[in-house]
Length: 328
Image 1: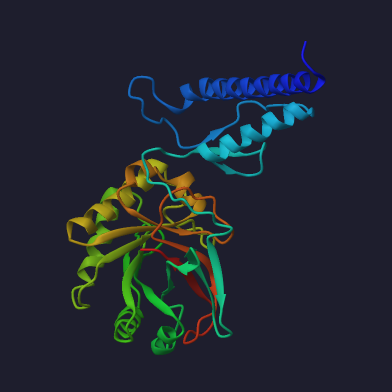
Image 2: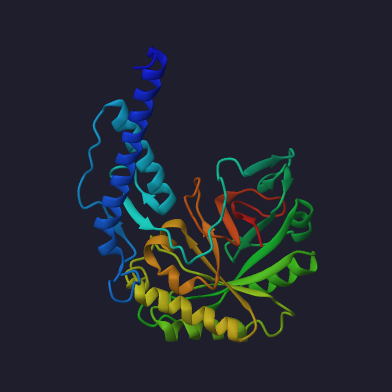
């Protein structure tokens, strides 16, 4: 029969076997239920970008149930991005086809407060592995780029232009572009332009890219061009807020393909939710992502940069300025 200690060990082992069996069963049921919804049976391709729980799962309050639920939630975070608090959340499947980052956003990013600036850096083994970037437009008037450089900023992303709102959607050059871009470069910063997109289809994306390329001819060698796509809250004449995921993805693809064919590296700037809920990243996986997220972002993919605040402070810039951790 064995000693009491041996019987106790057997009982504990039996309980753990039961727990593991339940976990495997729950994951199997989950994949069986969701698998048919996530993938087309013939092509094997995703059929949607967003998923929601079709029912509310209840695990109970027992110690075993809590352990099972904890493991279930850990599984969800490995396979999905959760929008909202579990269990009242929306799930977005993490693609196995897009390169993932290995960031621990709570521990791998550290502020360096030197008394003058307080910039955020990515750190590995105690060493900074990122640079500081700011992005500016005509909203920033005169900038002392030498002070910006001396403060520790290495990269300046300058708005080249934008598409206007309304049905016409005219293309416009930022009135401060040449001033900001050329003076930042003279001060020794790495510079790159961005275009604020309101394209609603592939052809308009191509048109925006050609406009950007044409207006870069007199500004020396440039490696990358950024396309900025985002939701606009302040104007009811915006063009691209409510277009479909397919149309938005096609518009961004048109911009990026045109930029790349002209010899530049395309970078896509968007917010956390805009990337994951409003574009088909499977079609854009060959381009670099620049994330805007002002809390700890649950973003699974490799990033060129992380814009962590729109209210940053930087010597040489009057008022607030967007600041990013730059990792490319």
